[in-house]
Image 1 (cartoon, one colour):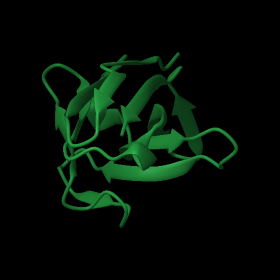
Image 2: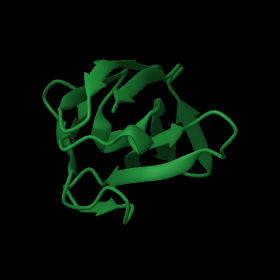
Image 3: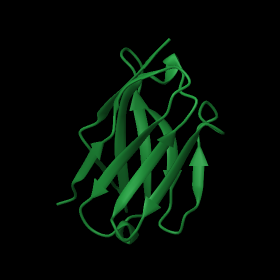
Length: 115
């Protein structure tokens, strides 16, 4: 059974930084890709960033240049470094793993950015 456990969320002022972590049960190489999504109240869940096991990354336009996704294969952990945070980044952030046709989700971690 795949387990994803997020941590690192919290309250931060606009312009500040946070780093989210996602601990993965099993090797990251067993997945096609890892990703971070976010969902604000009343909004649909949206893709923030993706990374393949070999380090290819993609970002939503809204976070390009401010967020960085990375992975530590030895620790089976995926990170999301978030800099220059804005109030509109406030959301629950979810780690996601894709393997074949199946997606797996973590429980989410809340990020709140105050103005």
